[in-house]
Length: 300
Image (cartoon, rainbow, N blue to C red; front, top):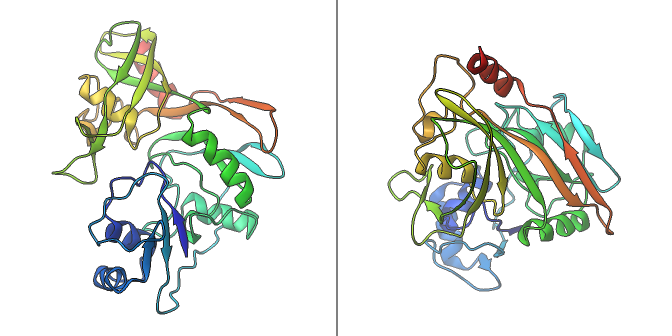
């Protein structure tokens, strides 16, 4: 098996990453395989505690054949764009992008496997068939999917070089100032709470462009453009600025009077180059139910 590390998995321990993508293997088995040389990182043996870097190539020769199959499920997909090499879907809030150790059903990958079968890239393994980048479970919006490995590599290069434009809409708590802002603060994993990210000096460069769309007494409606794409980037930057995303309980917002399924955040705009040429694809969707509901409440 071969896996390539993207920016969402950087800084994870080697044994932790392999445990996530091979849930049928125990952590101790994974560690033994690493120690025995069955795992190579960029062609070299590494310690179990090796901290992964973006672009690392993981080669894993499991001594035993393990069942890593994912069940295809007939889950409706809202397809915003599609051609012979890729598609863009509007992922609903509440859906995981791909299976995890604990959840192997009702994810986007389960739905993709039902509709497209083997016509999905497998560069990142069975658990992430077709997946180029991710959205948090409770963040909705536009997500690119690769139908083959060449398209995956073509689009992944754009993601790596930050030539894809990704814009989000969010409602944040409080009165955000100024009207136009650039947040340039490094992000890394929270050492005390590894399921969270945080601003830290030794983190990866993280840059978010902020534009105020509408102000309210207790909140601000924003457009946010990602220059980089770190895990939880918008949520972390907003929390650090003392303006957490509305209803984002993980990053300190708490639930407001108007209830939603966690953070009021949507990936609403994508601009990228279509495989395999120079045609520019530009996509935009309307505000989702959460944003519409909160804006209605704030405007009343």
